[in-house]
Image (cartoon, rainbow, N blue to C red):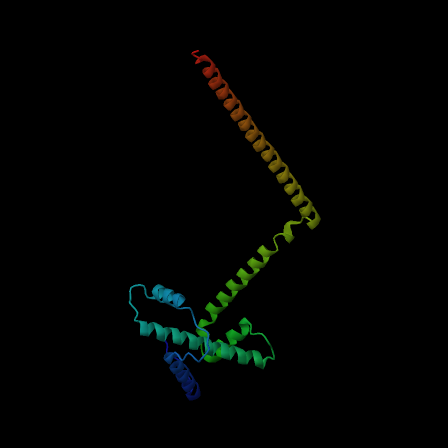
Length: 192
């Protein structure tokens, strides 16, 4: 592991920031790295070692400070170039200026992966536009599908109504036959 020393001014800034983070001052409104993500990373890197909660907090605070330093330096580079948006090149230059050139290759790889994912999402969102079928034709096909579905539903409803009607007719015939049998049975029982 390599120890990187900062100048006196940077050391005091880093120290004061770490002290503020360690006290967890609720008045300070800052972004944080999700603890679950940090715990997962720690388990992946150190699978057989138990890491104390204080150590986890320290790692989390160091990560926050690293992000703060790199983003501040990237912002300074962006401002020097009179730009309004920080881009990956600004971050890479910031890493170099802070002495973290060893991370450059990994950061470039992650930037490429992010670019690929973004491009893939864009392609997926424009899939409908890339079908090569005009919107009018798609609308016509949709209307045709709706009409076919309505017709099939109408046929199913008619069949259902016929079944209900048949059941009612059968029930009425059954009731009439039962009534006739009871009436016939009453006449046979006349003992006069």
